[in-house]
Image (cartoon, rainbow, N blue to C red; front, side, top):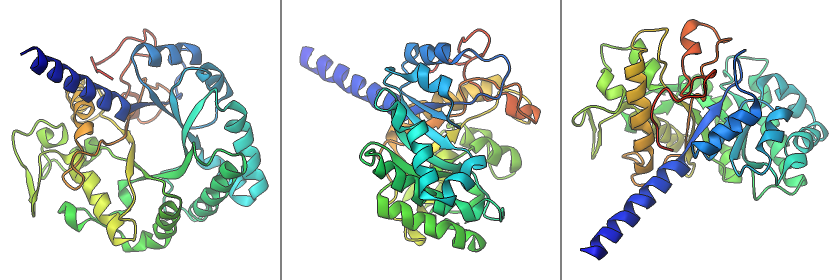
Amino acid sequence: MAIQLLFLGLLAASLDITESQSVGVCYGMLGNNLPSPSQVISLYNSRNIRRMRVYDPNQDVFQALRGSNIEVMLGVPNSELEYVASSRENAREWVKRNVRDHSPDVRFRYIAVGNEVKPSDTTLARLVHPALTNVHEAIAFHGLKDQVKVSTAVDTTLIGVNFPPSQGAFNSDVRSYIDPIIGFLVDIKAPLLLNIYTYFSYANNQRDISLAYATFTSPGTVVQDGANGYQNLFDAMLDVVYSALEKAGGASLDIVVSENGWPSGGGFGATLDNARTFYTNVVRHVSRGTPKRPGKAIETYLFAMFDENNKEPELEKNFGVFYPTTQQPKYQLTF
Protein backbone atom coordinates (compact mmCIF):
# COMPACT_ATOMS: atom_id res chain seq x y z
CA MET A 1 0.00 0.00 0.00
CA ALA A 2 2.83 2.41 0.88
CA ILE A 3 4.47 1.75 -2.49
CA GLN A 4 1.16 2.31 -4.27
CA LEU A 5 0.60 5.59 -2.45
CA LEU A 6 4.13 6.72 -3.25
CA PHE A 7 3.61 5.91 -6.93
CA LEU A 8 0.32 7.79 -7.01
CA GLY A 9 1.91 10.77 -5.29
CA LEU A 10 4.77 10.83 -7.79
CA LEU A 11 2.30 10.52 -10.65
CA ALA A 12 0.21 13.41 -9.33
CA ALA A 13 3.34 15.50 -8.86
CA SER A 14 4.48 14.76 -12.41
CA LEU A 15 1.09 15.77 -13.77
CA ASP A 16 1.20 19.04 -11.80
CA ILE A 17 4.66 19.77 -13.14
CA THR A 18 3.55 19.02 -16.70
CA GLU A 19 0.57 21.35 -16.38
CA SER A 20 2.50 24.20 -14.78
CA GLN A 21 5.29 23.93 -17.33
CA SER A 22 2.80 23.95 -20.20
CA VAL A 23 0.89 27.08 -19.15
CA GLY A 24 2.09 30.67 -19.30
CA VAL A 25 0.22 33.96 -19.06
CA CYS A 26 0.29 36.96 -21.42
CA TYR A 27 1.33 40.21 -19.78
CA GLY A 28 -0.60 42.94 -21.58
CA MET A 29 -0.01 46.52 -20.50
CA LEU A 30 -2.87 48.54 -22.02
CA GLY A 31 -4.21 49.80 -18.71
CA ASN A 32 -3.73 52.84 -16.48
CA ASN A 33 -4.20 51.00 -13.20
CA LEU A 34 -1.72 48.14 -13.58
CA PRO A 35 0.87 47.12 -10.97
CA SER A 36 4.49 48.06 -11.55
CA PRO A 37 6.63 45.56 -13.52
CA SER A 38 8.44 44.51 -10.34
CA GLN A 39 5.09 43.80 -8.65
CA VAL A 40 3.96 41.83 -11.69
CA ILE A 41 7.07 39.66 -11.72
CA SER A 42 6.62 39.03 -7.98
CA LEU A 43 3.04 37.96 -8.68
CA TYR A 44 4.16 35.55 -11.43
CA ASN A 45 6.68 34.04 -9.05
CA SER A 46 4.30 33.80 -6.11
CA ARG A 47 1.73 32.02 -8.29
CA ASN A 48 4.32 29.70 -9.88
CA ILE A 49 3.70 31.05 -13.39
CA ARG A 50 6.91 30.14 -15.17
CA ARG A 51 6.21 31.51 -18.67
CA MET A 52 5.25 34.98 -19.87
CA ARG A 53 4.33 36.57 -23.18
CA VAL A 54 5.08 40.27 -23.61
CA TYR A 55 4.05 42.08 -26.75
CA ASP A 56 6.83 44.63 -27.11
CA PRO A 57 10.27 45.25 -25.65
CA ASN A 58 9.84 47.11 -22.38
CA GLN A 59 13.08 47.90 -20.59
CA ASP A 60 11.39 48.21 -17.19
CA VAL A 61 9.92 44.73 -17.61
CA PHE A 62 13.32 43.33 -18.64
CA GLN A 63 14.87 44.86 -15.53
CA ALA A 64 12.19 43.32 -13.32
CA LEU A 65 12.62 39.92 -15.00
CA ARG A 66 16.34 39.68 -14.26
CA GLY A 67 17.10 36.56 -12.27
CA SER A 68 13.44 35.54 -12.10
CA ASN A 69 13.90 32.37 -14.19
CA ILE A 70 10.62 33.13 -15.99
CA GLU A 71 10.75 32.10 -19.67
CA VAL A 72 9.70 34.90 -22.00
CA MET A 73 8.00 35.09 -25.37
CA LEU A 74 8.97 38.55 -26.63
CA GLY A 75 7.10 40.24 -29.44
CA VAL A 76 8.46 42.28 -32.31
CA PRO A 77 5.42 44.60 -32.56
CA ASN A 78 3.77 45.03 -35.94
CA SER A 79 4.87 48.65 -35.79
CA GLU A 80 8.53 47.53 -35.81
CA LEU A 81 8.30 44.93 -38.58
CA GLU A 82 9.48 47.37 -41.23
CA TYR A 83 12.57 48.24 -39.19
CA VAL A 84 13.76 44.66 -38.68
CA ALA A 85 12.71 43.56 -42.19
CA SER A 86 14.60 46.33 -43.95
CA SER A 87 18.14 45.13 -43.13
CA ARG A 88 20.15 42.54 -41.25
CA GLU A 89 21.94 45.35 -39.44
CA ASN A 90 18.64 46.68 -38.08
CA ALA A 91 17.59 43.23 -36.92
CA ARG A 92 20.96 42.70 -35.24
CA GLU A 93 20.61 46.03 -33.45
CA TRP A 94 17.07 45.19 -32.32
CA VAL A 95 18.13 41.78 -31.02
CA LYS A 96 21.20 43.22 -29.29
CA ARG A 97 19.22 45.94 -27.53
CA ASN A 98 16.22 43.83 -26.56
CA VAL A 99 17.55 40.29 -26.20
CA ARG A 100 21.31 39.85 -26.05
CA ASP A 101 21.91 42.75 -23.65
CA HIS A 102 19.53 41.12 -21.13
CA SER A 103 20.51 37.48 -21.61
CA PRO A 104 21.09 35.22 -19.70
CA ASP A 105 19.68 37.22 -16.77
CA VAL A 106 16.37 37.21 -18.67
CA ARG A 107 15.41 33.83 -20.14
CA PHE A 108 14.07 34.44 -23.63
CA ARG A 109 12.26 31.44 -25.11
CA TYR A 110 10.65 32.81 -28.28
CA ILE A 111 10.70 35.92 -30.41
CA ALA A 112 7.21 36.43 -31.90
CA VAL A 113 7.83 38.45 -35.06
CA GLY A 114 4.48 40.14 -35.64
CA ASN A 115 1.08 39.33 -34.18
CA GLU A 116 -1.98 38.38 -36.24
CA VAL A 117 -0.80 40.13 -39.39
CA LYS A 118 -3.55 39.85 -41.99
CA PRO A 119 -2.48 38.57 -45.42
CA SER A 120 -4.78 41.23 -46.90
CA ASP A 121 -2.73 43.96 -45.21
CA THR A 122 -0.47 44.83 -48.13
CA THR A 123 1.73 47.03 -45.96
CA LEU A 124 2.51 44.53 -43.20
CA ALA A 125 2.09 41.12 -44.84
CA ARG A 126 5.05 41.54 -47.18
CA LEU A 127 7.29 42.31 -44.18
CA VAL A 128 6.71 39.20 -42.05
CA HIS A 129 8.88 36.70 -43.94
CA PRO A 130 11.93 38.99 -44.34
CA ALA A 131 11.53 40.10 -40.72
CA LEU A 132 11.52 36.48 -39.60
CA THR A 133 14.65 35.62 -41.58
CA ASN A 134 16.51 38.72 -40.41
CA VAL A 135 15.64 38.22 -36.74
CA HIS A 136 16.59 34.54 -36.95
CA GLU A 137 19.93 35.49 -38.49
CA ALA A 138 20.42 38.12 -35.79
CA ILE A 139 19.72 35.58 -33.04
CA ALA A 140 22.40 33.32 -34.55
CA PHE A 141 24.80 36.26 -35.00
CA HIS A 142 24.53 37.06 -31.29
CA GLY A 143 25.11 33.42 -30.29
CA LEU A 144 21.56 32.72 -29.09
CA LYS A 145 20.36 30.27 -31.74
CA ASP A 146 20.29 27.32 -29.36
CA GLN A 147 18.33 29.26 -26.73
CA VAL A 148 15.71 31.30 -28.60
CA LYS A 149 13.23 30.21 -31.28
CA VAL A 150 11.90 32.68 -33.83
CA SER A 151 8.30 32.48 -35.09
CA THR A 152 5.20 34.58 -35.76
CA ALA A 153 1.74 34.55 -34.17
CA VAL A 154 -1.24 33.92 -36.45
CA ASP A 155 -4.94 33.53 -35.79
CA THR A 156 -7.59 31.13 -37.05
CA THR A 157 -8.99 33.54 -39.66
CA LEU A 158 -6.37 32.07 -42.03
CA ILE A 159 -8.33 28.81 -42.07
CA GLY A 160 -10.70 28.27 -45.00
CA VAL A 161 -11.97 24.75 -44.18
CA ASN A 162 -12.56 24.19 -40.46
CA PHE A 163 -14.81 21.13 -40.27
CA PRO A 164 -14.24 18.32 -39.61
CA PRO A 165 -10.80 18.76 -38.05
CA SER A 166 -9.14 16.27 -40.39
CA GLN A 167 -10.18 18.40 -43.39
CA GLY A 168 -8.70 21.60 -42.02
CA ALA A 169 -7.08 23.73 -44.71
CA PHE A 170 -5.78 27.26 -45.13
CA ASN A 171 -7.81 29.63 -47.26
CA SER A 172 -6.50 29.51 -50.82
CA ASP A 173 -5.98 33.26 -50.90
CA VAL A 174 -3.61 33.19 -47.91
CA ARG A 175 -1.33 30.44 -49.19
CA SER A 176 1.10 32.85 -50.84
CA TYR A 177 1.51 34.48 -47.42
CA ILE A 178 1.56 31.49 -45.09
CA ASP A 179 3.44 28.91 -47.19
CA PRO A 180 6.83 30.71 -47.08
CA ILE A 181 6.39 31.17 -43.32
CA ILE A 182 5.65 27.46 -42.89
CA GLY A 183 8.69 26.56 -44.99
CA PHE A 184 10.87 28.86 -42.89
CA LEU A 185 9.62 27.36 -39.60
CA VAL A 186 10.18 23.82 -40.92
CA ASP A 187 13.75 24.73 -41.90
CA ILE A 188 14.64 26.19 -38.49
CA LYS A 189 12.56 23.66 -36.51
CA ALA A 190 10.51 26.31 -34.72
CA PRO A 191 6.82 26.04 -33.77
CA LEU A 192 3.98 28.05 -35.24
CA LEU A 193 2.45 30.44 -32.70
CA LEU A 194 -1.34 30.36 -32.79
CA ASN A 195 -3.93 32.53 -31.04
CA ILE A 196 -7.10 30.48 -30.38
CA TYR A 197 -10.33 31.75 -28.82
CA THR A 198 -13.14 29.27 -28.42
CA TYR A 199 -15.14 32.18 -26.95
CA PHE A 200 -15.39 34.02 -30.27
CA SER A 201 -16.27 30.84 -32.17
CA TYR A 202 -19.06 30.18 -29.67
CA ALA A 203 -20.35 33.76 -29.51
CA ASN A 204 -20.42 34.04 -33.30
CA ASN A 205 -22.04 30.65 -33.96
CA GLN A 206 -24.32 29.62 -31.11
CA ARG A 207 -26.43 27.52 -33.46
CA ASP A 208 -23.65 24.99 -34.07
CA ILE A 209 -21.41 25.44 -31.02
CA SER A 210 -22.66 24.85 -27.48
CA LEU A 211 -21.32 26.57 -24.40
CA ALA A 212 -20.35 23.19 -22.97
CA TYR A 213 -18.31 22.31 -26.07
CA ALA A 214 -16.51 25.68 -25.89
CA THR A 215 -15.73 25.45 -22.15
CA PHE A 216 -14.59 21.79 -21.87
CA THR A 217 -17.75 20.64 -20.07
CA SER A 218 -19.43 18.42 -22.68
CA PRO A 219 -20.24 15.07 -21.07
CA GLY A 220 -19.23 13.09 -24.15
CA THR A 221 -18.00 13.23 -27.72
CA VAL A 222 -19.53 16.07 -29.72
CA VAL A 223 -17.74 15.59 -33.04
CA GLN A 224 -16.63 12.21 -34.36
CA ASP A 225 -14.04 12.56 -37.10
CA GLY A 226 -12.94 9.15 -38.24
CA ALA A 227 -11.15 7.51 -35.33
CA ASN A 228 -10.87 10.79 -33.45
CA GLY A 229 -13.58 11.99 -31.09
CA TYR A 230 -13.76 15.61 -29.97
CA GLN A 231 -15.25 16.53 -26.61
CA ASN A 232 -14.12 20.17 -26.66
CA LEU A 233 -13.74 22.93 -29.24
CA PHE A 234 -10.18 23.84 -28.21
CA ASP A 235 -8.85 20.48 -29.40
CA ALA A 236 -10.91 20.66 -32.58
CA MET A 237 -9.61 24.13 -33.46
CA LEU A 238 -6.04 23.09 -32.78
CA ASP A 239 -6.30 19.94 -34.87
CA VAL A 240 -7.89 21.90 -37.74
CA VAL A 241 -4.68 23.94 -37.91
CA TYR A 242 -2.51 20.82 -37.61
CA SER A 243 -4.41 19.38 -40.58
CA ALA A 244 -3.96 22.61 -42.52
CA LEU A 245 -0.23 22.56 -41.79
CA GLU A 246 0.01 18.98 -43.05
CA LYS A 247 -1.55 20.01 -46.36
CA ALA A 248 0.85 22.95 -46.67
CA GLY A 249 4.11 21.10 -46.05
CA GLY A 250 4.22 21.71 -42.31
CA ALA A 251 3.45 18.25 -40.93
CA SER A 252 6.59 18.35 -38.77
CA LEU A 253 5.63 21.59 -37.02
CA ASP A 254 4.46 21.90 -33.45
CA ILE A 255 1.93 24.57 -32.45
CA VAL A 256 2.30 26.79 -29.40
CA VAL A 257 -1.00 28.36 -28.36
CA SER A 258 0.27 31.89 -27.89
CA GLU A 259 -3.10 33.28 -26.69
CA ASN A 260 -6.36 31.83 -25.46
CA GLY A 261 -8.93 33.08 -23.00
CA TRP A 262 -12.50 33.96 -22.12
CA PRO A 263 -13.87 37.38 -21.10
CA SER A 264 -15.72 37.85 -17.81
CA GLY A 265 -17.93 40.67 -19.11
CA GLY A 266 -18.77 42.94 -22.02
CA GLY A 267 -20.39 40.49 -24.44
CA PHE A 268 -22.65 37.51 -25.02
CA GLY A 269 -21.67 34.59 -22.79
CA ALA A 270 -18.95 36.71 -21.20
CA THR A 271 -19.60 36.01 -17.52
CA LEU A 272 -17.40 35.39 -14.53
CA ASP A 273 -18.72 31.83 -14.20
CA ASN A 274 -18.13 30.97 -17.87
CA ALA A 275 -14.65 32.45 -17.78
CA ARG A 276 -13.83 30.58 -14.57
CA THR A 277 -14.99 27.33 -16.14
CA PHE A 278 -12.96 27.89 -19.28
CA TYR A 279 -9.70 28.91 -17.62
CA THR A 280 -9.89 26.19 -14.98
CA ASN A 281 -10.50 23.50 -17.57
CA VAL A 282 -7.96 24.65 -20.16
CA VAL A 283 -5.21 24.64 -17.52
CA ARG A 284 -6.19 21.11 -16.53
CA HIS A 285 -6.53 19.92 -20.11
CA VAL A 286 -3.42 21.03 -21.97
CA SER A 287 -1.12 18.35 -20.56
CA ARG A 288 -3.20 15.71 -22.39
CA GLY A 289 -2.67 16.80 -25.98
CA THR A 290 -5.26 16.61 -28.77
CA PRO A 291 -6.79 13.63 -30.58
CA LYS A 292 -4.30 14.13 -33.42
CA ARG A 293 -1.39 14.40 -31.00
CA PRO A 294 -2.47 12.58 -27.83
CA GLY A 295 -0.25 12.79 -24.79
CA LYS A 296 1.81 15.68 -26.16
CA ALA A 297 1.42 18.61 -23.79
CA ILE A 298 0.20 21.80 -25.46
CA GLU A 299 2.31 24.81 -24.54
CA THR A 300 -0.35 27.43 -23.89
CA TYR A 301 -0.47 31.08 -22.86
CA LEU A 302 -3.58 32.40 -21.13
CA PHE A 303 -4.77 35.84 -22.16
CA ALA A 304 -4.24 37.78 -20.05
CA MET A 305 -2.71 38.54 -16.67
CA PHE A 306 -4.91 41.58 -15.96
CA ASP A 307 -8.02 43.34 -17.18
CA GLU A 308 -6.76 46.20 -19.38
CA ASN A 309 -9.03 49.21 -19.09
CA ASN A 310 -7.50 51.14 -22.00
CA LYS A 311 -8.59 48.56 -24.56
CA GLU A 312 -11.65 48.81 -26.80
CA PRO A 313 -14.34 47.60 -27.23
CA GLU A 314 -15.67 46.87 -23.72
CA LEU A 315 -15.31 43.11 -24.18
CA GLU A 316 -11.55 43.47 -24.59
CA LYS A 317 -11.23 44.98 -21.10
CA ASN A 318 -12.30 41.76 -19.37
CA PHE A 319 -9.82 38.97 -20.15
CA GLY A 320 -7.68 39.24 -17.02
CA VAL A 321 -7.15 36.32 -14.67
CA PHE A 322 -6.03 38.71 -11.89
CA TYR A 323 -7.52 42.02 -10.79
CA PRO A 324 -5.01 44.80 -11.54
CA THR A 325 -5.57 47.03 -8.50
CA THR A 326 -5.54 44.31 -5.84
CA GLN A 327 -3.49 41.65 -7.68
CA GLN A 328 -5.97 39.11 -6.34
CA PRO A 329 -7.00 36.21 -8.59
CA LYS A 330 -10.36 36.27 -10.34
CA TYR A 331 -10.21 32.49 -10.55
CA GLN A 332 -8.46 29.92 -8.39
CA LEU A 333 -6.11 28.51 -11.01
CA THR A 334 -3.27 26.13 -10.22
CA PHE A 335 -0.17 26.83 -12.28
